[in-house]
Length: 133
Image 1 (cartoon, rainbow, N blue to C red):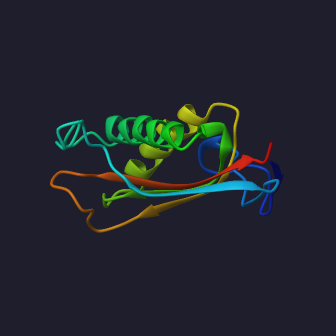
Image 2: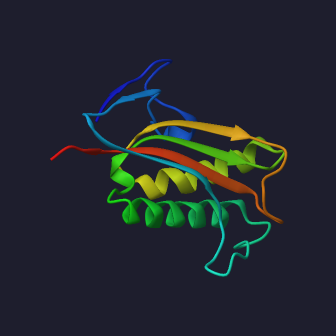
């Protein structure tokens, strides 16, 4: 995946996420509504933005794996955080950056009012591209 950066080479907390990504042709995997839920459907870590972001990334990795992809195949990620403080967005962002390691897809971080599940503070959606064989 190639990247194009605008507005400087760094983003929030030196996460270095790009503003665009160009992926080779292949299968595209769209995910939405990746929530911090356990196997029973209960919200993980109520009140803990960072733990919920980590849980979302774990759930995203699982969904991608089931589709034949991985976090390294993600071309675009959007992180939604239902908190009123910008610092809470940063905490969620740090967990997402850590989960991606050296991979830097195009990314957006948004503060929102409310999410779908009780006590849910974080939700993630992603687009992954698995290169054609």
